Each structure stands twice: as structure tokens, then as C-alpha cells.
Picture 1 (cartoon, rainbow, N blue to C red):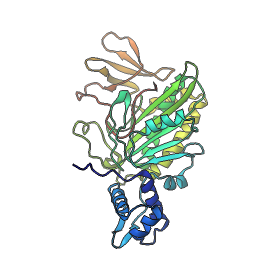
Picture 2 (cartoon, rainbow, N blue to C red):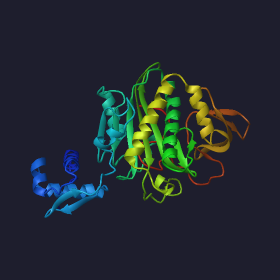
Picture 3 (tube, helix red, strand yellow):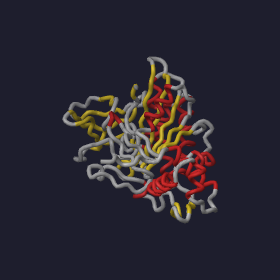
Picture 4 (cartoon, rainbow, N blue to C red):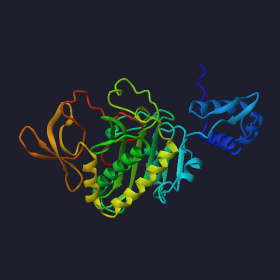
Length: 355
């Protein structure tokens, strides 16, 4: 039995898109594309079909030639860079049509001493992950899946305020793009009408007093998504709440700008301001009855804000003791659905972790 053909290489897909974009007003024959890209015409046809499956509108066929029908909403460096207004984030961009995890790619880059602000983007992830290794649903072309390499100056406790700041940036980017008011679930989820539409994962390599590097992963469900049955009650996308969902390129550019401003805020020691703003933006932070932990070891209480480090304080119902919650999961009391933190898109969700 023959094995199924492999997907076209990243190099071929980028090269083909480059040729079609550079000659957007022309119909280019398959033979010419094959010569330019140094592949067979059959390989060109397969690559065109692959781009179409990703949502790229390509007119024509092998007998007549090919032409772009519209500028694709792909997270290509060539399309993203003209929209960037962030001096640090996105100066170095690595894009993949299909990858196991942008988070893993960024961590490998950190080990290679690549520069701070390096950005890793993917159209699809095959092993996107969230908090504590939960899988993150990452279908092609439906979400914004990115990871940023950071080299913050300061000790590891800096990272929780940084993750809270990232949540504020994601919330603002979504609110600007859609007529919605996102909620924040401590520590790392963004919700629309109680369902998760985005999540954040922050991982690091550090010593007791110094962070070597950190990787910030963000996933946002943008387009229409066919969620698995177990996630439909828990997950949502911007397409379900916006009359016209934003382009992923535009959303990514604005998010990077907001993230860079928040990163500077955290680096400048404004943790108290970040905590206060997070409390105002989150319905979970104060006076909310919550269930903490995972079955069978759960307990109930009422939230009383964040402590000086950014951890959630909850007054336990059983004995009135004020507990500092160091990690989730956290869900509203009275919600009988089994909580699952893997509802969504790309390498996201979770507390700061050592790697």
C-alpha cells in the first residue's frame, strides 16, 4: 500500500505565494511557476490545492494558469510587517503553514540565543497545548496562534503580572475588533459570554533570581470553528460574536502593539497598576462564588481580589479561611459542567511554568 503524499514543503508554499503575490495582475502558467520554483508542475498543482484548503483564493487550473483572486488573510511576514507598529515584537518573524507547536519552536529558538521579540506564527498546529499539557484545538486558518520570545530582566515572580498584563492586551485587542466586552478568568483565559475564546501560556527557564528567557503563547479563536462535542459548551470564537470578524493579520498587528506596551509596563515595575486593572476587567476577581481545583479535590469560596504577587485570594466557604490560589482551575460555583481548560485554539492556557 502506498503511503499518502506528504504536504507541500513550507519552502514551496512560501515561494508559490511569493510568485502569485508579486504577479497579482497576471495569470501565471503552471510551467512558469514550476521553472521559477524548480519543482514539477504536479508539485505546483498540489501546492495550489493546499493553499486553497487554507482559504487562499487562487483562480485557474494547470491548463490555464493561476492567479490570486484576493490578498489572503494569512499570517505571512510580508503581509504582517507593513501593519506593525511595535518596535520590538515582530522584528524577527518565523511563519509556518503547519507546525507541531509555536511554543515549542520559540523555546528552541530561545536555546539558540535568538533575539528578544522574535515572533513565531502558524496557520495550523498539530500539537498545540495549554495548561498542564492539555491539548489546544488549532485548525488551519481559523485562529491566531503565536508565541513570543522574551528575555525580561528580573526574577521569576515578574512573570505572573506579565501574564495578567498579556490578558489585558488580548482583551483590549478583541474589544477593539468586535462589539463585545470580554471577561478575564484568572489567571489566563479570555471569555465571551462565559465561553473561552482565547488563552495564554507563559513558560520560562530561570534561576531563583534571574529569568533566562520566557515564551509567551497566545491563541485566539477568530473564524468559525467546528469544535469537538466536548468543547462546544465551553469554547467560542470571535466569528460567533462579531458581525464581521477581524482579519487575523490586522488582529495580530494590533495585539503585538498592545502586548509590547504591556510588556514595558510590567518591566517598569507597574505590577500594582496591572493587578488593579485586571481586577476591574475580571468578573472572577472579586465577590464571585467559585469552585477551585479539579475533581475530586475541589472546594468552594468567594473571591477577594489579587494579592501583591498577583495570585487570587478566595475566602473558603467551609471554614472562612482566606486562601491564596496559586494555580487554577477556577470556575463559577453552580456550573455543573466538567471544567476543561483545553477549549480553544493554540498553545495557550496556564500559569507560569519552568521548562
